[in-house]
Length: 218
Image (cartoon, rainbow, N blue to C red; front, side, top):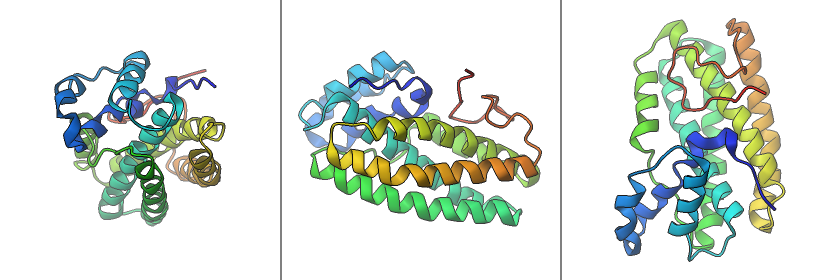
């Protein structure tokens, strides 16, 4: 089965970072630091740095992409809980913090049983997006955070829909189980975004130019 990840480049490009957590693969660190945002390069690197893992290419890409995306959601939610003054945004962020933390732990357990190490921290590019988000306040913060959540969950829906067709039974079950939750998050983000008057929500535009995930127009 061949899965198309064209909407997931910002997340998929991070999969090679898992090599840094394995001391037996230090020789690949230099190559990993030269990541480019292309799916062909991402896939090639994923196959190289995880060659000894008992998963096919699609399974590796899904697992590492989902793990990195989940990490991003948790860290962004933590910022929103502290910085947003809007009760509905804070409540939404709290839910994401709880839901994604639980999902991240479950996925981590699954992939580590298969010998695959997930990244322990976000790379500089995505960390920079969060740092910029952390400088915003009031409506500017809420608008940007919701725009990011709309775009990111739109992309995650495609990732987990594809994941629900994986050959690996454990990852497939995880994707099937998590997919409805992501759909709920996405719909709630759209609902709050509409209230905040985010007129370009889900069309791929980035309100303030800092979102790490952009939805491709179709």
